Length: 227
Ligand SMILES: [Zn+2]
Image 1 (cartoon, protein in one colour):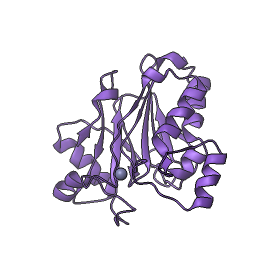
Image 2 (tube, rainbow, N blue to C red; image 1 turned 90 degrees about the vertical axis):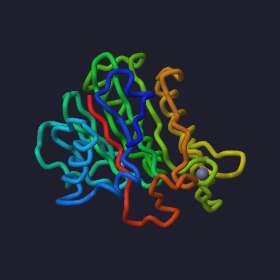
Image 3 (cartoon, protein in one colour; image 1 turned 90 degrees about the horizontal axis):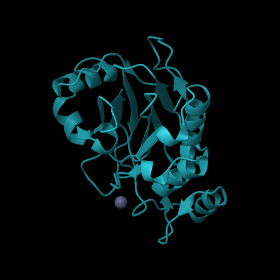
């Protein structure tokens, strides 16, 4: 597992990405959720209950209310203030975004691909943190995890222009930059830029990850985190 120390160090039990190597060597038996739990346990983590949702490139965010089965709930982000449970989203080129209120101890794990970024899903998550949980913007830390990067995210001109019109960031090489686009959404919301970390690793360039665009249509990396 790739451990994301940049955000873990603010007080999370763990935050990381299960990548190709983890999945190919140790992933068997039972449902996908069972396999993820087994894998985390093998890494000497204590994952507790695992929460996943039905991801469909929406801007819906599910706040855990102790439902046991959440896998059929349509959402692309999960938020909790409960310690000792694992939040998990699957990714294969889309951006996993981790949001943590280090003072009030509120955690969000968000799936922000092109559609989620266009829908400003991270700002929807921030609205939940600041309204429902009364988070103070200055206490919020964010990590924009590994995803397809501005080195590789080519799109047809009409789609690229649409993204630009909607306020997303287009790189000099005429690619969509999901990292800076999401960073900008945090900054526009009032989050301190120094508290936003970009992991800066491209899943399309780097064979350590599954990449949808590189041909992995079924396999997924998993972003996991726990308070
Ligand atoms: Zn790349």
